[in-house]
Length: 70
Image (cartoon, rainbow, N blue to C red; front, side):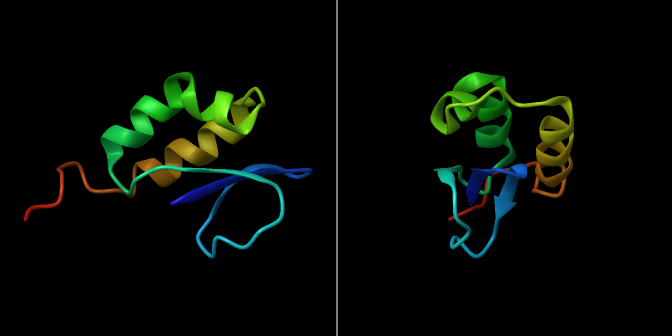
């Protein structure tokens, strides 16, 4: 899943076509949890605002708890 930083802030880009600096995370909650600890902000070369973090955490909470099976 692509996350993009633009003039409007940081948001999830399901189309993968929004303009701005992008970073990718798997659609696994564990990847999002790790990314929100700092690596996502570094990849986007920005500090995540509280509003950005809340929006990304809300999306993360829609992801399944467990890893997809084979």
